[in-house]
Length: 396
Ligand SMILES: *Cc1c(COP(=O)(O)O)cnc(C)c1O
Image (cartoon, rainbow, N blue to C red):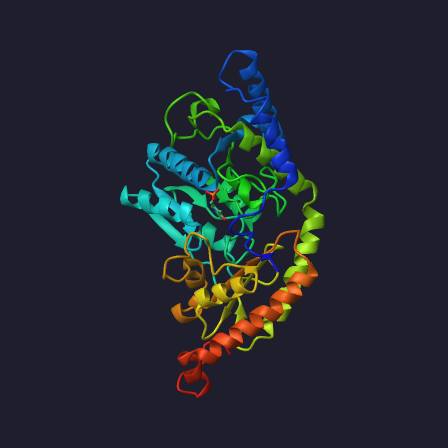
């Protein structure tokens, strides 16, 4: 049994994406900046990829910058908006407590430079209230950056409403759409988005490649200096094979989005129903406004790490939070942000699906998680105290 339920960390590349890359590693291997025809063939591919990607999110090709992934796109978006603000004497940024570290750590850096950062509450359901965004905007606000969908608990934020508020206030609105792209419909015009980050490896594309959309009129600040690639805003020879693989993967994901979402939501709902039957367990994140492939639970009296290792023994690849946080003993900042206390946040499990998962896999997983949770609880002194009434249950 080999069941992959960690698609929030990364996905397997699709055959379409792999096949789209191959010609650009072999025959069409040129540098798009070269003037000869080998280079120009690559330049043409790059141009067509930019057009195809722009169409998929409804923007102009000139508004697309290819980056090394979601982290770089987040960094560049936030730094760029901060520099624009700084020039106007506006040094206030609004974000949320449960953003990806690519956002939070960039904001920390700006804070040390003297920026004033407001992190909005995400409430117990993991949803940001647009009215609270509105209330937090001041005359000196230069940027609002709120993620489209959360990578750990899968909640989908009211992006269009937040975008509208920012637009009316004349504030740049960036969204980290890394978990959303290819899984939820994105239309930057309809959704009032000024800047948006995408990463290919979250929708069956290659790792190390991403997109930063920035609306016309928003000048980007370079994170990487060098040659004049990407209109001089992102130096470095373009990774053409990866760009072609990402473009094909995004097209495929968008084309099949509704069909895949329907299948994944069905499996997600089966999982949620099955795991809810485990006593003293709780679903993290809003039940309705969530990614079709995300399930995240806390089980009282359990260590997330032991749970993962025992599930791995049973052939199930899962996660206890984001891949970036695992390995450290700190509980997930996302779970703390939705109000889970340390002890509870430690006992978390994220199962993130892809369209390739089957009902049989889900049935097996429900059984396996139920067994492993029971096994671990039977060995746990904390669980004994809870059952004997020496400690009180937090999850009823
Ligand atoms: C994965 C992820 C990132 C980072 O993307 P990379 O391409 O791995 O750098 C950023 N934000 C979110 C929400 C993510 O899930």
